Length: 438
Ligand SMILES: [Zn+2]
Image (cartoon, rainbow, N blue to C red; front, side):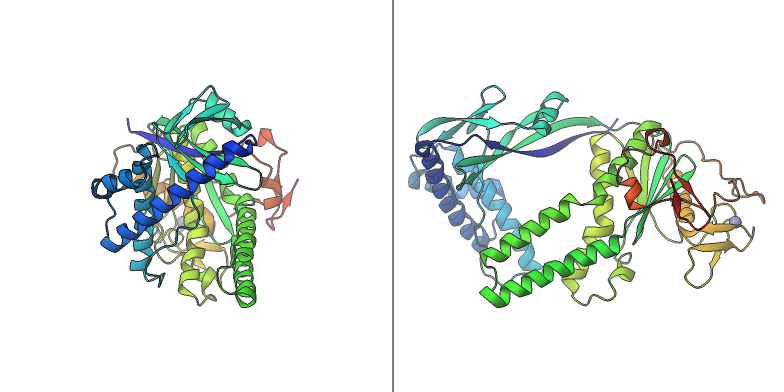
């Protein structure tokens, strides 16, 4: 059985600190920042991206320059600097920056197991140049959920300072070991521009997402903000950063993909299934973004939409021990899953007709069933039983309407769902026009 470790970061604030104690953290942050700055310059200049190498080269020097600091800050600063150098060199390689060196703007102090410890569950100790400092934290519901459901604290932790509130912001990392179960079948997920189709137990659910509108709207808003502030105050000013950060947070909050990922994974767990999705090439977002000229923007839209949905599903799946397989997307919407014949679609219609059996097929239903067939025909190692599609029969084993009428679910309806279990929410019915009647 395959095992993996899943990690999640949980952000917790501290209580307000007395001025005297907070000052120690301000000093610590300053020293830490100058260490990281110095290390990043060196790492980028010498193209050193290995933590071990950087540590060997710089440890003595750091200890001599900052003798008052606990020695392990030399380790964590090296790790921090390596990560920054690596991502900067990557940008540089892809010509996405024309700077010589990265700026160390945002600093969080990295702590390892020698630099912080739990003192109960509402208090931590942090090693500083002034000895151990004890800080009370304010845990929230999510924090307790992790503590109480089999997750354990990882040894690393990061600290940021909120100078206005005189509080620390702590980034705890929780970890959990997960075993992937042997799947008995598959839930398939087909991500489209404006909907996500999910095949679970012989039925296709079509979740409307309006992704095109949301994603494009978001990027154009972002771009407008950038241009406005750049022309007012010059590039990279603080107000611009703040406005963009707010926009970002809003974008994350309203993110439909997590909701759908949850529904899909719940369904897979319920049946003991794995999840099958299309292996995405460079093409899928093309339709959606053909009006967008900017190459970088295109890439980001693509990432944020199609791949983003798949990543969310993958991440949620991992947490619950559900395997995810990717299958070759070729012909998934063109071939009849029953007859193996070509399906003809007239002028951009979502509904086509099988050239052999003459039955009607909805494009997304076809895609979902073909993904299932491909997943089942995979390497055979964990192939579960056949879904029951008779590929050589002349009759259509699926109900005559099931092939061209997915269960369409508008955003306003599924946004309140937790699973596909209809007993859990009001029964929805779909009429012939695909409008949902509740
Ligand atoms: Zn057919």
